[in-house]
Length: 172
Length: 254
Image 1 (cartoon, each protein chain N blue to C red):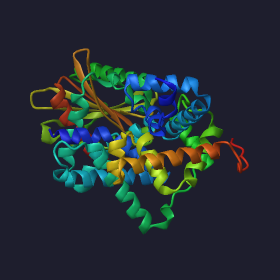
Image 2: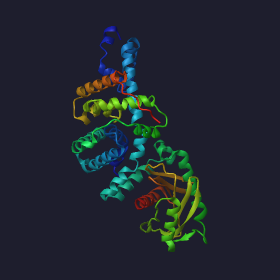
Image 3: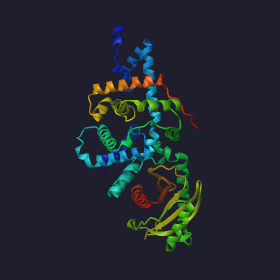
Image 4: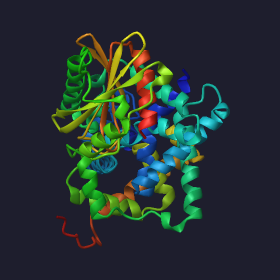
């Protein structure tokens, strides 16, 4: 049995989370991860020995995502709607991060971030990559990664502190 | 750490702290710095809150549920199915410890549901497989009727998998009561008279869950679920043999 399969499989959940956090669409995240897994299996010989698998996969996923976005404008990221949040909660038995209004706010703020900053932050926080891995996945120097993460966090903080808070939708 | 060093605590290091990228001693340094610098401490606390919100928005449990069995499904599409599925089965089975050792299986109906499925499938096997005169309600001669009937009762299309490649022929099947509703059991027999059963019941949570192995009461079982049903294959086989058959069943059921 190939250990590549095992290692690939172990990365799938984080790949899916990263994909879902980028596109905010479950079915699309499924497709992205499946494409990515297929490509990884085809191109496994290209992964240099000793190189970590995870950043390589995330980079591949990101490329697939960006190409699809270019091809299909419908895929442009949109904020999570109330339904999506509710569906989230089905899977999220014990809310670890604040209440749903805070989550909704986070989803909206995230959607407003410039793509580069969003990708940098998500690669680390959701994709489970360390800084070196995230820099490799995004094909940027670590310093650039850090400054994008820093700017993303500052913007999210501004968003959370209000200013122009959109009216909250009532949630059943 | 003196005051000068504290003042120079870099933003990079604070981010690394929030992302868990520091060693324990480095983290302790940051914590000492934060204790003396409330403004930065508030900023760091906000970043940590952001991270928690992101974790909650994109939960690991859902990702695990959605990617379980994905490699197998992928391989089916591209034709290399059996090989990859077998690899997947071996991964799942080789991980050892059976169903309950896998925390990740929580979304597949939870340990309680899994426990029920395991017990039901094994009990049904233990009760009916030694039967000489009435092992099944409907025999293999009436397979079309059997399959139609069970599909109707389960509310989901199900077929009797062809296990002849593994040397097992269909004996027939029966309807059984299960915790979550009706259950179907198909029985198979090889020329030596060894029997295995394929058990399917409702109560799937609508997600895929990959193969799990369990062994008790002198029997072995492999379990999984797809979007519609939960399945078990039970027999007196070892892990590898039963895993191979489970993969075969899985391949034919979807």
